[in-house]
Structure formats: C-alpha cells, structure tokens
Length: 203
Image (cartoon, rainbow, N blue to C red):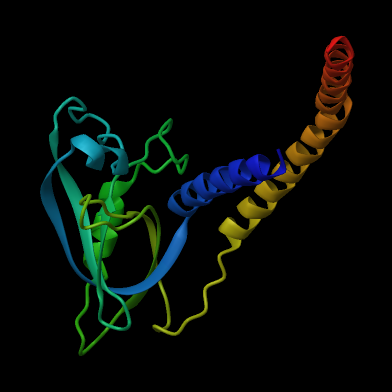
C-alpha cells in the first residue's frame, strides 16, 4: 500500500508540476527583431496550446491570424511568442484583452545587433516545434541590458500559496486516513483472521 501511494503521489506531482510550469508566468530577456501576423490552423493537438479567438472574431474557424513576436535571446538563439487575448473568462486567468496594444508596443521596441534594445517579455506556455505551439506574451518591459536580474515574485507567491494549500490537504487526508480508512482496514483484517481461524479449525 505504501508503494502504491508513493507512485500515485509521483504521478499527481508530475502532472501538477507540468501544469504549473505551463501556466505560471515566466520572463525572458530578449531582443525583438520582428512582429508579424501569421495565418495559423488551430486544430488537433495544437488547439490545446492556443487561447480563444479575440473578441469579435469567428471562434468556430480552424484558421485564424495569430500575432507573432519574433525575438532572440542574449546568446542569439531565436524564440517566438504568440500574442493572443486570454479574455475575461479564459484560462489561464490573466484577463489579457490588449493584444493589439502589446503588438504595437513590440513593434516600437524592435532593434538590431548594432543598437540592441533589451526587453523582458512576461509569458506563459511552451515552445514546441512538433506541436507548433508558442508561449503567449502577456507584457513587455524594457530593461537595462541582457544581464539584468529579474526576481519572479508572482510565481513565488503563487507557489507558496499552492504549497500551503497542498500541506493543508495532506494534513486533512492524514486525519481522514487515521480516523476512517485505517480502522476499516483493521476491522477487515480482524474479521479475515477470524474467518481463517474458523476455516482452519474445521479443517
């Protein structure tokens, strides 16, 4: 029973870890090199990694224009972000409804190698070439340089609150196990032992 519980908890924590890694905001220091509007087919597995259509757009179409922000990291590796609204009731609950404003801001901050302008892009999600998924940009903030130190206050606070909730759930489960499950298991074990004794006595 102990190993079954450990395996179950490992599976649960793995799923939760992946969910949190995808959902929690992250920040990358990059240099924006281009912005574009890309016609993208939103279907199959890739549909899971896109937000809802912008307000006023046709949400039933499998193809739509997606705003893309192309950038490079300080080590010159490329990274692309999508720029979509999450809406008021969408998930994650970032209440983002200013995608066009953010796209204009990104266009204004474009730069080249000779005169780099470094920015911190707050985003969530994963970049996957296989699934054609992009992290969704939430905000852009100009920074002093590529070596700036950014403290992820929001993820830290969210994780601390989440850890407290998990601890409380774990304590409640322990009490439930001690008061309900273990007595039932002990009672069943005692009854089974009595049945075995009777059967062996008859034998």
